[in-house]
Image 1 (cartoon, rainbow, N blue to C red):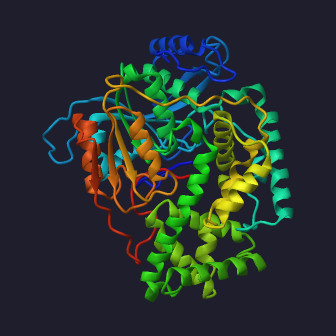
Image 2 (tube, rainbow, N blue to C red):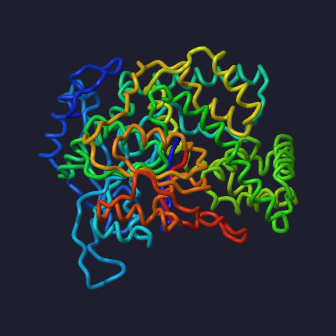
Image 3 (cartoon, rainbow, N blue to C red):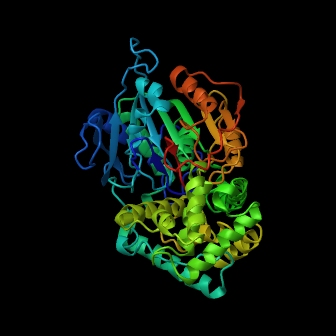
Length: 532
């Protein structure tokens, strides 16, 4: 469950009673939200030109919303959330003479934790979103800790990209000890750089911030769309503030079961990636005439392993080693429109031309500060959100067993999350996400059946816990985040809900979207794309 990215045609990149008080928190957090929301409603958002975000259309406006760092002390230290907006166009894309009435603000979070949503309002420029953009002000924001919203940092960004680097699928004891030391150092760096504020970056506060943002926007009830991790704190919001919900869309829903947050969710993710990795290899094998990487899934795997061995011996361009190779092919598990470029890069590299692989996989040094910040927020939120094993022997046991059947992502997922074993801030007790009959307006859950980043069981669990929700499944597909993508059936359900409040029966299914063609190139599709 990691950072998310918004891809678009522009190329841009608590009023109800808590059932349990979080560890390290107090009941005062609830009235704290009331105080903060009342203040935000009075102040509003002073939207203006986006002066610190270059090359944006003039239709996009930016502003700030103040929220308490600690909701137990709502009049204490405040932090500012950066907010963006494109106003509803009122233009029906299918009938230029029809003026579309405004329905309020649609607030979006792309996931992560650690992803910026500031560029989201630009999504209204692409065809799949024009009808929604006609009726809604499209609102994005940087959650606390992200980007321009009191940014967190755990290490010097200049040292963040470590490459070329190894990526053993079955690491040695020596390598494990090295990674344990690095995880301890990273956790120590987070504590040193953030100080006592570190404890306040977690999902419950993200949900509370969302209610303050709602009030600042002048919305009596919230219309919200969360993707990937955004579905989790969206579900927290639905549990904490059900009377404040107008409509909610959960796209690529993660499993909100408190027992899953987050250690077990990451184990499930690693297992699911193995199946998605095989989906990709089978596609490449079906197009062996184009890529010449092998006519079976196993043959393609052998080609990939041959590239890993070559890169271990001599990194491509001095920048791309096995870890960078694994990272760029991991992205193919997120989005199948990445499949052609990854297959082409692997084919060309094995035939002696590394240029495309280097372009795709080399660490983007110019984006080091943004990447370091996203990783810091991801780590802080997941580590703060719930209990984690503090003995590496537990991690070693569970993941050694898992890597026997799911080697592709397992150990890299461990290294991404291992600082949580040595975390220096108090842990929250995960909230029991659950709503009863009549407490929450009907909500829409979207899920791809073979999504590896947010395995489908999570959508089923979210559906069970949010009474009155409707689950729409894209069958036999695995793209992570399906709203506003290429599937017209999915988009029909999304538009019917957001524009008319109309939902199908308790569950509905859509046929899969078409697989990519070998001649396609990644990056052409326009959709809200959560990434890990």
